[in-house]
Structures are given as C-alpha cells and as structure tokens.
Length: 115
Length: 112
Image (cartoon, rainbow over all chains, first blue to last red; front, top):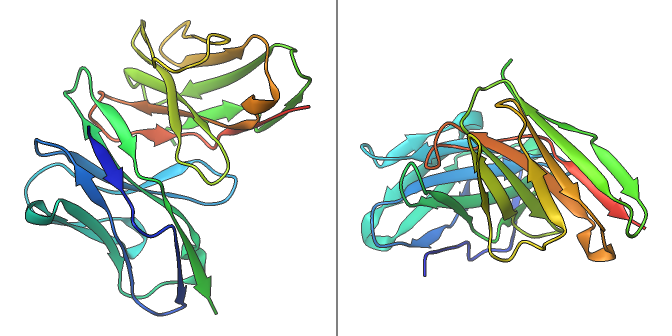
C-alpha cells in the first residue's frame, strides 16, 4: 500500500543551525510530492512541491527539498533555522490521477528551535 | 488575496447537539476537502467534492455529512457529535485532485 514515512517524530535544533527533515514514500509510479508546515492552531501551508524536472526544488521561507528516486526520499532542508520555523512539518504524496488523486500524509515531524 | 476561510475558528457544543462548520474559497477551485485532525496526528480525510460530485472516505462516520451548494462554499455537518469528535477540522481546496491543496486555518471543535 502507498505510504509516507517521516522517521523523526521530534527534532530539536539550535537557531542558526542547519536542518534536514527526512521523508520516504512507497509508491510504484513517480509521485507528486509536497512539504507542508503547520504552526500551532493554524492550517497547513505549502512549503514546496515536486512534480517533475529538476530534483532540487526551492520553496518559501528559505526551504528546499531534493527528490531522490533511488532512495524513494524527499528530504526537506534549510541551511539556517530561525526561531519562527518551530512548527509541525508534514511530507505528503498525491497518488492517482487528476481525477482520482488523494493526498497521503506522513505522521509529521515536530521541530523545536533552541535559542 | 485569494484564500480559504473557515468559520467559526472555535466552536464548543454539547454532546449530541448538531453542529455545522463552514468553508468558503475565492480560488475557484474544483475540489473541496474536509479533514479531521486530532492532537499530534496528521490530517485525516473525511470526504471531498469534485464540483458537485461527492466522495466519502470508507471509514468516515455516518453522522458526518457535507454540503456544497455552490463552487465557493462547503459545509461539514455533524448530526450527533460525540466526545471523540473533538478535533481540529480543516477545509482545503485544489484545482484538480493531484494539484497542491490550499488549507484554511481550521475550526477547533470541542464537544462537552
């Protein structure tokens, strides 16, 4: 069955340090991949997406992600974390077509930023 | 700015008392979704509309229903809420099923 795995439930980094959040997916075809961020009490905001083409995609707020087909991964990175980046991060994949596609979420990773 | 707006942001209701949550969009997207999100969990899809076509997830409880009277509005009706229905309810829209979804800020529902 199709699935998305975020191995790290909780990550703590110091402000200014680099960040990498891991995401692995299980899907036979090339998926459409997304990273969303959710601040407490808020909805989900799209950080970036991968559909095709360049495997390194740039997003908002200084985030980037790299699609690696051989590893079935789509890890999110940021070179220097800010305190405002503390939030819940969800990796997601759309499976299916434009008529039937469904968004499958990973379990989420909670990011804590130390001053 | 084009957006997805949910009302109310917070709702407290009594056990068994019907409640309706609303969602509106200015994006003119074809698809509207309702998700339930419990604490420290990922959003769980309840159902969605593609235009006027309704699609219910297999494990969505029977007392959860939805209406989409026009392109812009979609409602979530909980006929007889139980304590286990306390959660954040998120509305989202997308142009097509495989396109990015745009989320509202959610309605935090508490059942007492």
